[in-house]
Length: 454
Image (tube, rainbow, N blue to C red; front, side):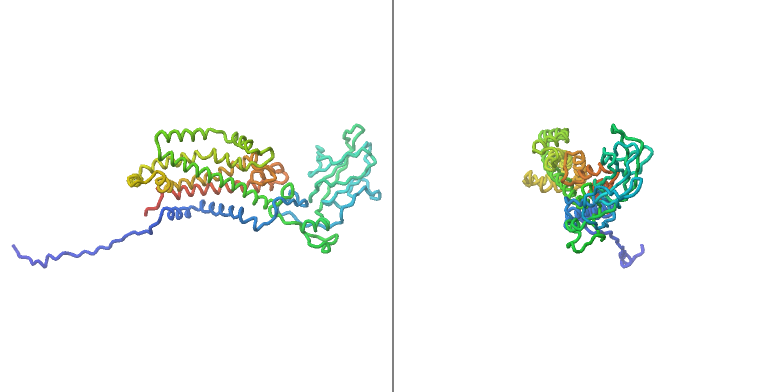
């Protein structure tokens, strides 16, 4: 055998480069926030919710208009309406102008929101005259409009209209009536453009000017600005939407917070105790689910002495808290049944931890993700419930504003002034949609199985 030197058997030193993939250590909530930010719809919804809260809380500090103030010069005015008004003399009664020549129905002077003065020659074979006003031209069906006056003396050939005049175009008709009050085929019609006017005294009273000497008859001034228009009583819609948001969001956020809190405690106790106690508690929850909400809403209104036409905010809040907690209790109970089998719960019990400590320190914190998602889904449901009850007259009643009661008022005039319905309905829809999308995003972000483990 050949002798080989031991130096020839020197170990081979291999150098290996180890590439380690490292990521910063993130807590559960930090990871959830990163995944929530990556969900664009949920993030936009979160910004919308924050904007609604600022609109509700900070809005009245910026827009200081009283929601109950009635601007009678601008009733049911949509946004963007011309606010210019002509200053005229104070109103003086008018009894016709015998020197006004003409044969047909005519204006004694240009039509204004103060008065429209009509004069005509007596119609043939007329035993009297009936005056009508319409906002649409007279067609072959002869829809004259609303009757303003019935003049039984055929010699009375003038009429002054002062009934709720607004800037715009009207169509007046004078129709001959027979001896028995029947309408004859003889009639005349005229188109009148009505201009917005005010007087010096009215301008001072409404705060449009500080001193009466600043105005003269014939001047042009601007009326009060209403960014979203006014309702049928001349109240500012923007101010009423802010005031209504306080009521709608108070119920929409306050009620879910209370019944979710009660459901969390109830479900945690039922899930941790288990056994027969758990079965009895959950059967009671099933019984509460079967109770009709609308019936109990009526009973609570009677019990609290809320009469017809009065706002039932407190009975509505009580009804939501009393009847809406079982869904949260069931969800939390299911989570507790899983968590109580974990090893750290058994270790805490061996160390002598009490039941209340286990529930408050270990179990409920581990269900906060589910609870938070439940709250975000419960809020739009409560807002929609309040809007529905107020819409049918069971919730918030006028003059207290809420988005539901404002929608109920706006639907009555939706064909002529749709903005009174569009704005409160839009806020309801936007709020419900934002909270639903935010709830979807939170559900995905707080799901531990979707955590990024790279």
